[in-house]
Length: 199
Image: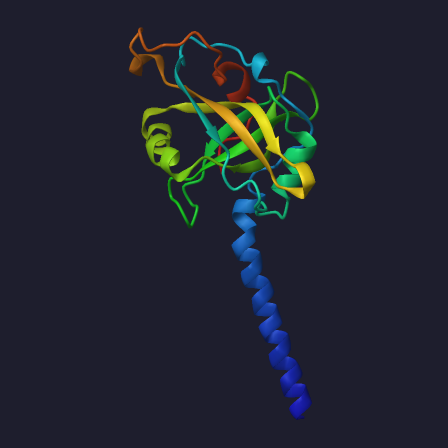
């Protein structure tokens, strides 16, 4: 009889653990489909006069040695799929438990056709300092952030790889003075219609 009680209690604890684990991983992980495939070149991003580029920022992607919520290894993704000239999209993650200003860095891929880019795998985040500056502008001012991979670094002798990027900050034309507008490409026209909204 004691063995039966111990078995039942053990089974209940295991069942509760599985339910709670599913809740923790579930909704955020599976809301948006993550696509894989050939990288979309930054040079193919079309300009949009309604969202001119206001500035650019060179930085490194942070958190490249971590794993994504679904278990994907960011180091593997970067080694296998990231090259200089690839386009990246930057997406807000307001539900991040560590930093409510968090901004994810995701690949842009062409899973089916070259003219239908989609959000791909996450390769990391922008720094906390940059996120503190840019997240409110994304949330309140309608800014759109894209990035181009400048260089994949490291990787020799078993060391981790890193990613240097240039972030392009696109602001609504009504918010940007003509002297601030840079003559650069803009993602709105071609990409935002194709990619699902942030989770």
